[in-house]
Length: 459
Ligand code: NAD
Ligand code: UGA
Image (cartoon, rainbow, N blue to C red):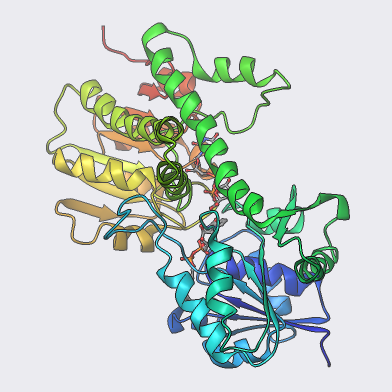
């Protein structure tokens, strides 16, 4: 079969893999190749045991792989053959030198730019899929379009808005697709080419076009706004715990205002995930580098509240359990940063686990999809840790359960049975407010939720 276009994606991670699988699924006449320097990751993309867990992903990959979707480590050949190259490598927070702990680390991204320049023999459209600081496309263009290199490259910004756990759904039915381009005839031609790709399945009115800088900045701002909502409701949860107001009732009342809306108002132990923190830090760094100190401080507040919320959760546990946790068994229900993913990057569970171990608890970690990753995250951390996928076995003998990930299965467990297997008094700390607190209390648990009055049997 001859294909209309060759698409390459550099970076086979949480974004590159699912995004390209959906493009291959929807654009049957496009040949889509995903490459990565991580040979083990590529081998897993080519196996039945995909490197990431996403509902619906197995089916999409299985039907497209070998037909018009390919996973490979042959980066040079991939570059040579491609008409359009998506760059979807990681852009973590820089850990060294200028901007350490705040700026984006662009080394992986820059390396791909140099590789593209090195191997390309024909004109290409380069699509920034990774989340990048504003003006990165300019740097990309400067690296690519040197006078010594005759091949023409057009750089577009096309940030990804998918959320983990709903990646396939978000890709198939996105709220919007954003494409930023230079406002030159060549830039607009490149942009139209990418618009054409997405119109295979996305209604044209949901495909937004803008200049490159607005596109790059919109991605950082979208994540900052989402995180800000969570920190706002989490800040209010602390006030609720002091005032006997119930944060779920407050969120409902506030969210019913159509100008505010009900989403992203679930108070929690804190937000995690690979992007909110790094993208806000990136935004803060950008503001500081333009001398906008007040703006930077404003956004930094979102992260401060998130740290405060995680710390508060552990302190509440300590206080509730008579100010000593040493020698007590605590079971974590959930380790992933959210439900329906095996990803644990920046998961609040990592913070809570570390702090509990400092208090010398005997820790049991349970999660339906993230045990493998949890073991890696906890490597080198001292303490008594056991891993147990089965929640009943995990809870048996525990003094307390801390629910840290909103997996649906935790709401449906037989808590009578769990209570019988636990030490007494039995505590449950619901860091996601997904359990039936009154029922648990009536059974005999001492129940602590986020932003709600505790339900205890102590007088
Ligand atoms: P990831 O770490 O899962 O994947 C990145 C991949 O790039 C890795 O497999 C790595 O080996 C590969 N890589 C790095 N340098 C390479 C090189 N020179 N050549 C080939 N491969 C290389 O990261 P991710 O979660 O997919 O995120 C990628 C980007 O997308 C980030 O900028 C992130 O901010 C953004 N983003 C992520 C999400 C998400 O839900 N994870 C959502 C939207 C946007
Ligand atoms: C987030 C954004 O939602 C995506 O649009 C974006 O593309 C992505 O970041 C990214 O750039 O990486 P993701 O981190 O996968 O997606 O998941 P979210 O659903 O946003 O959840 C993030 C964290 O906030 C999780 O820990 C979640 O449990 C928490 N959360 C979410 C709350 O505590 N309360 C809420 O009401 C919603």
